[in-house]
Length: 117
Length: 114
Image (cartoon, rainbow over all chains, first blue to last red):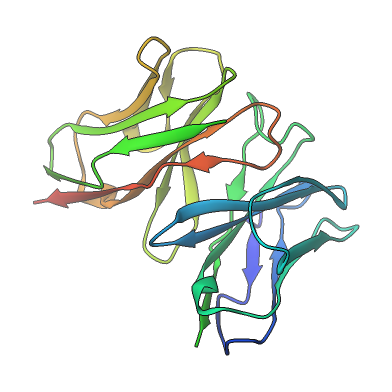
């Protein structure tokens, strides 16, 4: 069974540009969540989608946006990149509508390493 | 609101020694608790989780953790460290209804010496 796939694995962008990251969840999973990981701030929650609807959102500026398609694949977009957006971006997928619980868990992808220069 | 504190950003043990990684949490509602491991340039792998069933939770690779409500703790232990356990470990908390949102601690880097 394939795991969570994130593409690309590495990305270098220039300040002011925009970027789109992709996440393909495990087959059958309908929930996808996104996290930003930096040395200074650690792991921070960006947003979560379930059946193409955003159900939860973290405290990030509007430059960070996401969407989910009918096949559960998700993309996140960062516009007007800043140097501080350099980070490892992780997505996680989960099977059920309850996201995590006794019989469900979140599986993480390997991440996309974004470097803004 | 939820928060997680991991005591010790770096822990060093000898191979074969006990591993103890500390995690304290605060939560306004009964939480779910998790331990994840991250190897360099990799994503997060779930070691174990507490979801209000048994308070002593056994996970993969010989790790276990005990939920202690009175101490608001969820410390991770392993009786005998192996070189392959060297990695960064994250404790996380989530209210059952907080879709997608795990609140993570700052992480503890475990070093295992031969």
